[in-house]
Image 1 (cartoon, rainbow, N blue to C red):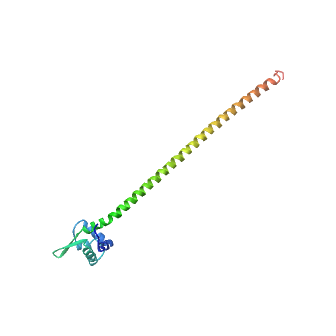
Image 2: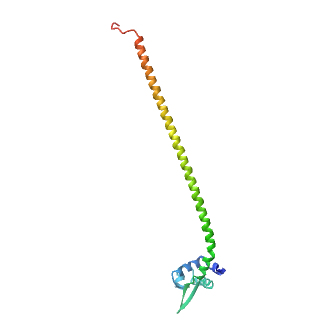
Image 3: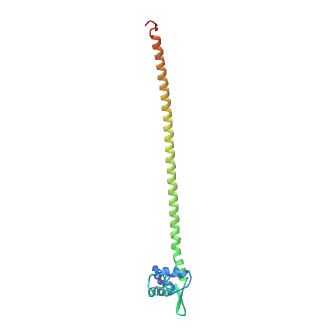
Length: 166
């Protein structure tokens, strides 16, 4: 594993310097072009470029009166190597978390399905009970109708014959 110098981490700790590296990843630029990307003064940007140069993250090439800055990716590769074990650790942890969440969701879905089945069974039982009650009511109504008809028949037969004289 490559040992990464502290100055590389210190250089990357600043958001302005990280942005400078992002810009240089697109291709070489002059100090003036880089400074034009910030609200900072040109000397402030030059100072950040100096920190990046001392950390080995950029190199500059004089071209006439200008300096062209280029990204030097080797120290960044060292950071990637240094971070690899942590990445493996977190990927493993995230896989474990995903498996746990998936198990929890499956359990929740099973519980919901069981609850739905229980409700359907209760509804079926209620429907059966309603059907039984309707059948009982119909039977009672039929019995009442039969009793009323018999009573009407009995009244008609018990009563005196109707005469026209009355």
